Structures are given as C-alpha cells and as structure tokens.
Length: 128
Length: 159
Image (cartoon, rainbow over all chains, first blue to last red; front, side, top):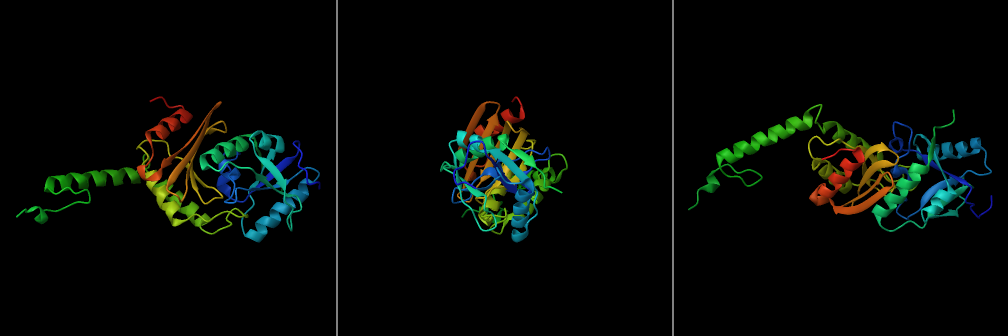
C-alpha cells in the first residue's frame, strides 16, 4: 500500500467500546476523539478486502480482550476538510494502519471536529 | 458565653433546631427524588459506575486509551448532581483521553456532548443544524446557565 493517502480513500475506526454506538446505529463523537498523543488510530480500507479489514479488527479485539462492536468508516476528504491530515503508520499485524493527525490543542475544539467526523461516518456492524 | 455550641449544627452551618429540621426535610425530599423512577438519577449513577468499571484500565478501546481516573469519576458525579431536576438525563460514554462524556442527542446534526476531564474543567461542543458552539467551564461550579440554555436548544425545548 502506498504511503500517500488519497482524498478518495476510506478509513475505518474500529469500535471496541459499545457505548460509542447509539441505539439508532449512528456513531458518537467519543469514538473520534484522539488519544493523549493527539493521534486517532484508523485503518485504510482502499485496495483491501472487507474480509481482511474485519480480520485485522478481530485480531485487535482478541489481543486486547475486548468485544468488537463494529467499525465506523469515514472518507479522507472529510477528515482533511476539518483541517486534519492522515499519516500512514503501518504496524505489526496491521500493515494498513494510519493515524489522523493535526488535531487542535483545545479539547472543546477537538470535540467539535470529532462531532463533524462522527456525523459523516457510517457504522458497519461486525461481519458474521 | 455563647450557647450556640450546645445547639445541633448541620453541614450547612444551620444552628437552630428549626433550621436543622428544615434542612433534614429538604435532604429527605431530594433523596426521594433521586430514587424516584421519573425524576431519579439513581439509574444514571449506576451507569456511570459501569462505565468507570469498563474503562479504569488503560487500553480499554483496544488501542492506547487512557484509563478513567477516580478524579474524573468524582467530577462526573459532581456535574450530574448539579443538573436541574426534570432535565432530560444524558447518555454516558468515554473518550480515549480518559474523559467521561454526557450526551444529549436528537440526531447526528442536533447533539451536544460534554467531556469531564481530570483537569477540573468541563468541555462541551454542540451541533444544532448549521450552528456550532463549543466552550469550557470549571467543573466545580456545576452546570452553567449557558450550557443549560444550549442543551435546551439542542433538545428543542423553549424556556
């Protein structure tokens, strides 16, 4: 997979915490808040089979001892339209890993951006 | 010599028997409301404890999430306790930076989220159609009047 992340690519945010999904199947902004390093861990979906994406998600759930509740997909162009960027950061067990970076420092501004990403995202329950 | 030290004294500093009695009645009334099915916050406090138990270890999101601390739990309880009686109760969540969240929701583009972090501040953001609002309040002051107005706007309640 190329290191340059295209605007047309789709990014998956794996959901291992059930409260990130609302009863109506939409995604809470909580799922898109970055960690303390101001990075949001995602997986690039373009050029990768759906089965492979789910295999990666299931592997992460298994290693961390959590339940996989699904994934929230968001398009790179939407991420960049919120003044964020995407950096390819392949990892052991997930060669398609990337981080969403360039987050604002202020927490309330992070929440505003995360809310926009969540509103544009699409939730997929785990593949059976 | 003042005799006030002989009188029963309450946490609020009330000294007369009547004041202490009134305070006890108010406390009992409040506890009844907290326990009531309609106005009660007992259920949401149990949800809050459940979220804490789910997230008190680091990595609870399967990645690098920070553990929710006791300070955050205490601040979240304080914030919940400051909500006006009768206000619609929020849904509880958590964020990877170790915050507890409260969400008031009508649709993805009509929602308000509050974060309780360990630094003693309440961070909020709201979407109401095309209107975006965000800000910060100190948690010790409880919920601010501005935030109550904003929540009511998101919920479509005219006050």
